[in-house]
Image (tube, rainbow, N blue to C red; front, side):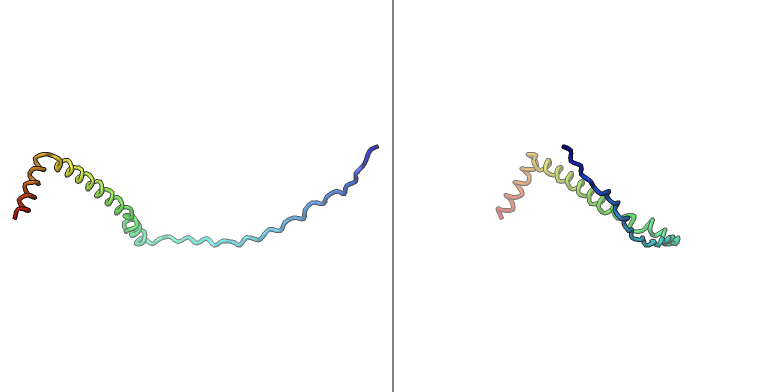
Length: 91
């Protein structure tokens, strides 16, 4: 025995309504020559300079500290500093 199932054809979905897009205004502003020159030579151009200067100064300080450690570990300087401290405490 065979069973036949009758189906109704499905209707396509109704078309979706799309929102109308608002036109976007395009404004082109050309900088005046003075403002353009200020942008190229002003503080905005040198904004990263402070960071680079701090990095160089930090590296120099670390190098100088390393040099001082090497010098102060030597026996001559250690003896000289010990003599200065003993003389100051003997007063």
